[in-house]
Image (cartoon, rainbow, N blue to C red):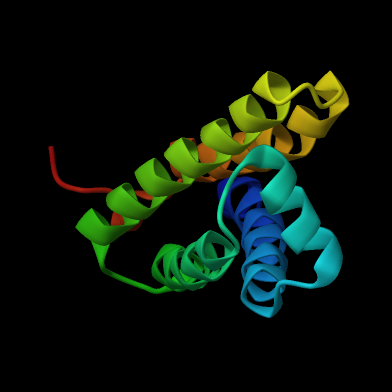
Length: 122
């Protein structure tokens, strides 16, 4: 029971954070559009990321799809690391990079603690 809880708590928090982020990316409110412009990304990129965030969350939560789960976590790692770096290199306070890194830590914890039935065979 402990190991299931240790897996599902970070997984649920990660999924919640990325679902909210994906929905906001698809809606692209003015504040988010301004943030994307500040970082130097085109506005359409927010919608593109939103679709992939929601697809990735669906894969991470779904039973089976073991290889896709690996790719989803890899994609989230690249995306969240890139978000943190983008904040730092555009002169944002270092604290702005903290949110994507905390979410990344949840993703990596979820991946590391996944049960045997969610792992690819060696």
